[in-house]
Image (cartoon, rainbow, N blue to C red; front, side, top):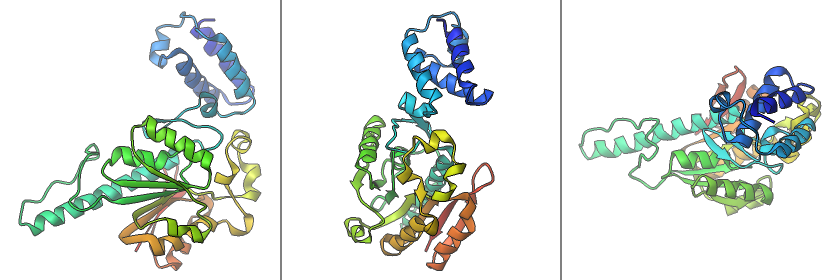
Length: 311
């Protein structure tokens, strides 16, 4: 089977359950993984034989059972970094990349504020703000401390540590299986993140944790009654503990995060959370009622998707 024949075979199979564009996108990912060639390279080698036709058919079978392509390939890309993923963790999503981007910009602005203040006090020329590319920009005081709650694959803290190597980054999750995956991803991306198994909903466990300049989370926020609106490949394969909250308490994790931040967020710190787009106003009100200043931000699709809460 040539690469061109393999492409047509998989596209035809996948169009029985996906639309044409999604079938093509999944096929591109699979063939790049199997051939080691990107799209342009494959276009120049359409008659090259596929080395492992049996593996293609095995993957096709899994995909036709609605298993997400990221789980089939055992990998996903997030913020230009590669992550191992499996059914113990959520698949990283573009909306979460937007949350991380917001965090990085805010941290860098505070790094500049700290450095420029210190320089001004010494009557020295002010420094220019760090550029987005200057990931190794250092600060004059101890590193910023950052905590990710419900880390899953570790995509949030690992990306932040990769981009801000001088930050002190920690992450927690209730699932030991998820933390094994996150630890593997930290090794894969050559960063050091402090991982810890913690049931965050139990407030007695908060004493295991320290104080932080930034608290970040993409917690479960889909109500159980909304399960029938979820795509089959998500509902049947991604971990429900990372997706769903009880109908009677859709803001459970946000209330806990707000209460935790009241005790564990350093002065001038900030909380960043991804939210249920249907509950933007309600989530913002919850943080405001706890005394936070709140900024509600839309994602690239125009949905109310993330919140920054600060003292």
